[in-house]
Image (cartoon, rainbow, N blue to C red):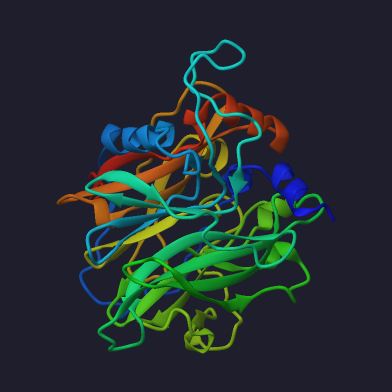
Length: 412
């Protein structure tokens, strides 16, 4: 096993490259009937009717990353999950993150890009606090310490919820993916478990980290499920979506799964229930809710929101368009059946050998009927070393970009 520093160098910007490699993972299956009653409400077909780039949010993270007021803060990262705090601040959670200093152009090879030194610190996760629409503070990074040598934590979905059901005190609960260094084809980490971290409010101190779904005993790493790609609260339940990494082992598609937890109990392993194909079960034997194994579906990173009584899922498109194009599906229940894909769109990308991935919805930033969606950008290359060099040569590549969109019924 390499030591931790070598493992980090080898997997630099690992989550971005992992997701880039799995963009073509696709899955969609039709269950025999709609499972109404998962939150109620009127369910109608939904698709993206309009979209436009959100330069204000994109530029705000670019300006923050380039700011040299501090030299130990965020200069780039991916993962890009967010949660609004009770006092109005927004907490942004990133996976692999560059810290350090950004230098004005030209870069060392004479290109007109702001750049960072290739020795800039890389940490496995970070958290940035936004106020009034502008990132203002990077919490001490990494926020979530490595669980063991050659292992790390990537934050995914987060919720503010009561410390316990009915409690007047709120906390932040953050879903974490734990991964360990592994041999080829797991050069970006082997899935290990899903954890939940509890952060105090308002100071955002990590109080505890609890494993809620271990997968270490599953012999085939491609069948290990990690929850937290997205979460939706409906009524008294938090629905938590996740998936496996089947495509990392050269299988054609990944699969998606869903669990549910009573609001206020995300950090309690015994409170989790999993969809077993026909009912919710406390036994840790989830069955896929999406995945036909062939033509349509989602990649390993996706996002789910609820629009009225309809669940809407955003993902990169299947096939060759998966490096550039966002599409969506809709369902009347988190367990499906999911319908689509519906209308797709290709958000702006910088020039070069790049790919988009990890579309994430941010309802807390939405205005009226306009929904904010972020997507990550990474250098598309066969080796982690080459990609890391290009990300340092042009710091704008490894930062979130944003669009706003409007949902509506499909055109007739």
